[in-house]
Length: 249
Image (cartoon, rainbow, N blue to C red; front, side, top):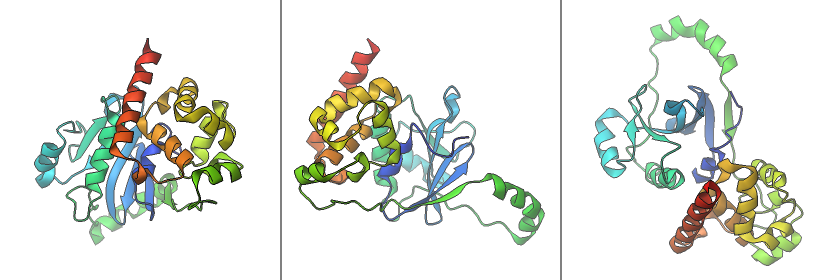
């Protein structure tokens, strides 16, 4: 199992900046806010039931959740979890919309694992000691300092020496951009976000998501994801659909 999400790494940009925990679970990655599991992602490829996102919702609230997002279905193996396969049309937008609702205060979304009884803890003590060696738990701090967080975008791009100096671009995306031949912030600025996405998707087809385009745009404009207008997002989605269709033909 990979130690880092690959295709679905971009989803971490949708989670609160104050930090969250990521933990390996069921062959995927579970995301916790405090003690509540909000999301599990899977990248199992051909295994269709384990390739996408699961959103935990207690059974008594599932009907309400499904009314809001009928695109979801209870997972065939873990029915407590509502499943969104990665091949779903508009997958990235659905994930964004669902998390926006799930992260609201007092949301019905998410699940707090039940505490084991003392007797159960005694019986499983040996197993837990072994499992502890296999489970990777990582505290994520997304408050990565930015050199030019409040500067004018033009000034930021002039001063930036590497891609990770720009807002929202981390080491993983920087590596993908390097693979596509984009090495510097100034080179990305000259290309613009559309040509940058064309080059990126040609080398890494799995980056053909609107969220990657949002990341490039906000990096070039030195603003947070929330700074994008709905009209701008709609234009990005339309362009990315055109790009997907073009590459399929």
